Length: 381
Image (cartoon, helix red, strand yellow):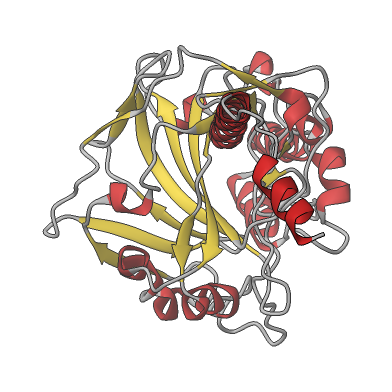
């Protein structure tokens, strides 16, 4: 709706949208002048003319006008979405130089994640990913605020290069990545109001690697054929969303970052679980080949592949971890060295004891001259 007679409403409105509103105001003013200057017939004719004449102005830019490749690809994001070229951007690479152990990081508490099969999730192809809307009865605790679930979505590579995770560990990409998005429901009424606030969002990230068939993920993956093209959607029966998480929920990376898609607001408290979940090669292939970015009637369908953002620079920030990096390895090495030292000491003690015993035995030998042999020799002569 245009802000007629409310100039302050234009604050934060794009120039294209503002121009459309100003043009509409111009039309209205023109008609008011016409009503005073011309007859009713003339005004009616002018009105019909304007209704039939299209407005030759560019449509306002919306959230769908971006992609991962091409002229609207990642390099062009900052031109249309300034935050994408700003600070606190995600994803990042987790390497030892930026990791710091924090003993105050507790396992997350999940409330309402076990959803009855009588309830329904909505799965949709939005042209950038496949997204499933979650129920408002789902939320997480053990964070600075209580965060209510909003949606989950996936990022992946392609059939020839299954390295589609957004976050990396020591430069290593994983096969794919799942994000479960929550908003700060203690301070904001919905995810739209929260998404541009510094404390607005909390996202859980789960990394994928190839392994055995995963029946929990199949509850989503088997519906991909129904959301093959953009804007298609399907209902998914409820299930326990916590099944999608790794077994070790107490080990994770925690840092402050951003949305990984435009508008890239730096509003996300990230929790990236340390241990990946496993899905089969066939399941990953279904994810990489099932969907298109384009609508069903598009003459040039575009496969939905490589929908992950490149790793961003991490300026003077720390990633807090809930586990001691290399702790298990250190313990194993220490135990092995300890055993070797004990064995070495024991060997030395045994050898020393053996040497002492041998010395005592030698001291007990008494020398006796061989008199009998000498007498026998003389008698023979």
